[in-house]
Image (cartoon, rainbow, N blue to C red; front, side, top):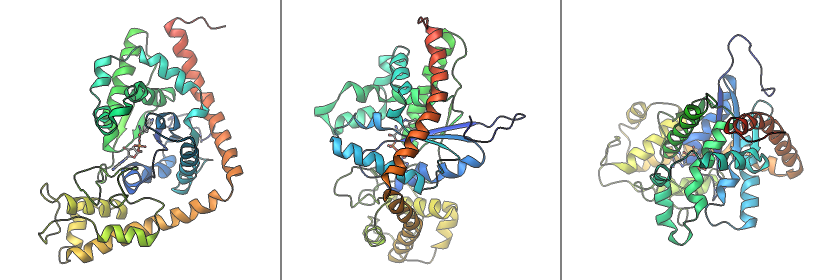
Length: 339
Ligand code: TYM
């Protein structure tokens, strides 16, 4: 991969991950996944995509899809993904994703796709829009990963089941033909793999949830971040300890530990003698301090959409070269005539 240095003796492992441009990116997306993406370029060859093809599996207006996609692309740079050291691109700009997605449908069992938790949850949430794309979603995700022969897929906890299905599909294909795809490994962070809503600490913090009081958005202003944390639902106890019966406090401890790069045990120790109000304020401050420079960098990037479009084009060209190599191999193995 020409994007990054080449070490002949020990080839660098490859990383792939992506994020959908639906709703407004949250602190959950950041802590569970995006936070780690920028730094991985030191050790790995990394590719990251805005998964816009995945976004239309839910109802989304054209204007919203367009704006969300540009916003997310700029935000990925703002969180630390340097487009010179990583391959950063829009999924729909590389046609190989849709093509391999179709091919892999034929090596995915209906029963396997039907078992996906996210399909079941999303079907329940929008019973009037249980479309085939929503069902097929993890197969397209498998195509995203396998096209780049990724070794590592850094994701939050909720995507692990999809990465597992990707491995099943890859294994089936490799067994039927011959080794074609690398076996990818999903990787979740130690703390923060699943961040919950501040308004309902039993529900995942999501990009499009309710009135937004439970979700902290990466681009929120500091005063909004502080307000949301101060109102975070906790319990009637006063101990700052992580446990199953204290989901609100556990969630806040996880967020704090992840933002500060410490363990949950160290966070508990730090707040041993604090009350809930002081604790919530401190977690809010940690989030606001982390997100402020990201928002500022994002705003600067958004002042020049022409430059962003150029970066998108360059990223897609680099991704396409790698993706088409895999796709061509797959077509040939299945028996398509190539001329
Ligand atoms: P998406 O857009 O829902 O989320 C992007 C990343 O953020 C993580 N995440 C969370 N982590 C912790 N707590 C939360 N509350 C939380 N909410 C989201 C997700 O686990 C994810 O890592 N299908 C993917 C996008 C995708 C993809 C791929 C990922 C498309 N193709 C190939 C990896 C590889 C998705 O919808 O993520």
